Length: 477
Ligand code: FAD
Image (cartoon, rainbow, N blue to C red; front, side, top):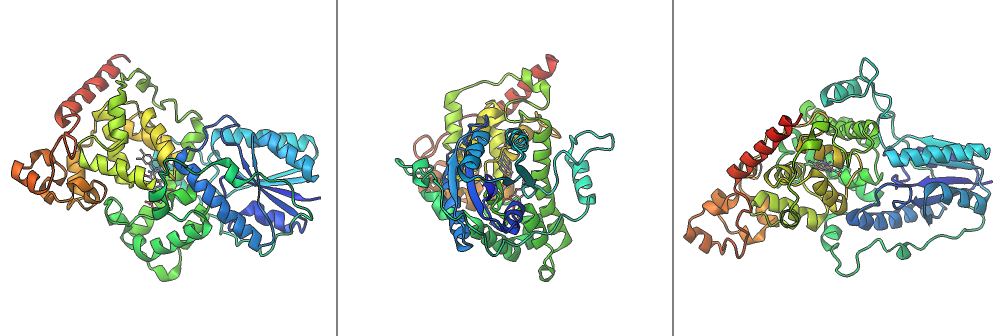
């Protein structure tokens, strides 16, 4: 009987332990992508990830077929879908790589139980994370709430396992079984087609991920510690969407960093490893806070008086706040499905503090528009910025968007790229166009309120209002 191999958020054939184990049985293997699409009770992927998924599945299908196998597509709740596949194929072994979001964990453990009750072999493997989020515990056996000791524990827990190569051949089923058609899943936008900028920016799939990693090792890593905060410098790896879809594993990345010829300065290496560890920490938090996207970790924030305002939210989403660094970030997100980390922090802070909009609204927008939208990293970082998270930045530390822009985009290259209507402003004014003299504005073709918005809030007033809201919340404790 054949072995069923389930693909979900692990769209790769290299360093895929479940695939290798299936191929090693020597039996026919049926690779299936099981798309629960929210049917297991979680959030369906947003628009940007659906676009990515479509292309990633095409690439995965191509690399499986080079090894002799196909890719069957099925959509529906995990348990029912797998049981019907078992019936169709008479498979008696089902292998998969573990997921670590709470809905995925629950669905997969129910699956394991149901399969074992039917005397079928159910085996799961690691790959998505360097460490099982349940295993790293504090001295007293509890979860970590603070990043630094988590990092120390992770760093002390030994070198992660080495990645494994893709199997050379996969024995297919003698007769194909019915598959959904990828086109029928309608994962791509139709009218309007907003994905042009995504197509220009990304190559979904495993080969694209390998290429990104190679480029990063050649050109980014050596400058990472110093350059990672400047959004105009393409210094960061941009591996996040590939990691989110499991086209590359943290094991592959970790070991690639050790390539002897790289001779990377220790500071750059450690800084980058610590970012990979933030991803692990986010999953650790999600594991111990299953409603991370809806419930505040610090429950004091339940009493925070957000001021829902659809107009302010829309201005932020569309990059029309009048603060150039925020608008550039929001437009980068809309155009390319990705935003630089420094600007994510500034834009998220602006929404939650300057505009007093609930972090959950920002998180939901990111969920829909990011190609790397991640069930752990997205809510963990939103809560961190909003001040309600574990080990969060204190609420009262409020980013000044002008100073952030001047510090991290000093000559305005990033703003000019994404906010072209300001492109001709001198660098002095690029982050605060309202301070430019009238003739400077007119020479640059900028008319505030017409070609570019007037700032929707005044920084000092907004900051005072945010601090007052914070004090009021503390007063209710
Ligand atoms: P690099 O600097 O090259 O870092 C390498 C990898 O480390 C990243 O690919 C990512 O997997 C991990 N990493 C880096 N920083 C973080 C971090 N702060 N938290 C968790 N992992 C990190 N990241 C996501 O992957 N998905 C999200 O949905 C997401 N939402 C975010 C929302 C907000 C409000 C903020 C402030 C940050 C968010 N991040 C998210 C974290 C971070 O911005 C991105 O991981 C990073 O910008 C991805 O670019 P990169 O691959 O070039 O990163």
